[in-house]
Image (cartoon, rainbow, N blue to C red; front, side):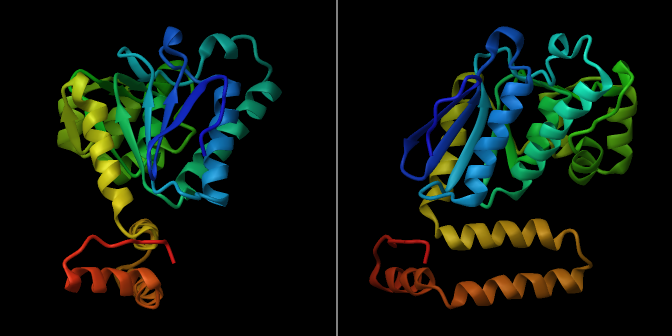
Amino acid sequence: MAKNYETLLVAAPEAGVLVATLNRPGIANAFNTRMMQELLDLWTGLVAAPGETRCVVLTGAGTRAFCAGADLKERDGMTDEQWFAQHEIIERAQKMLLDVPVPVIAAVNGAAFAGGLELVLACDFAYAAEGARFALTETTLGIMPGAGGTQTLPRAVGERRAKEVILSGKPFTAAEALAWGVVNKLCPPDRLMVVALATARTIAANAPLAVRVAKRAIHGGLQKPLDQGMLFEIEGYEKLARSADRREGIAAFNQKRKPRFTGS
């Protein structure tokens, strides 16, 4: 799955784990049109055929920022038509990220502002460096979040907290992000990727079909009333009960050995 991109570094450091790094550190990894096109390509490829990839870690280059949002220098002077054409790419990329079947972990190495925070919120969960800062600053620029922020932030922190963050545009700390549920864990900066990769490795060692179906059940079930969500879960469970990986998992447990999952 590793590819050569202009604005992303994509590598598979170990079996089953893909690391994607936003690679514009000189401008706080702000995304331009090219970066969003490349993210769209990356996520589309994973949706179509994840192959051996069982977990993804998304991070930013350097220590200053995860992603500062859109590159406002590129946007300066855009016509309305150019602005909307770029934003369509952003919308498609974010939608495709939400559809990636394998878990995507954000490793937030620095500031995650505006679209950068929306990227974090579109991932399945996130770890952050202790000094990271977060904000949805769009209302300070005459716009509003447009890459999912008004929908994903309330789902993470609740409606009232999300209104405070979005309507004020004020930054919040890593400690607040942890307390509010934006991130799952804080790490010393030099340990962030070690911890994120350890979790990715653990996920990658589990049955890939089970992980994908469980991810889908959690996300899809939360969009439904509880009774319908329970039925959605059972559909996934019954699918897995017929899998070779289920038989392998039970056999390995009883034979006291490590399971050899094949995704079938």
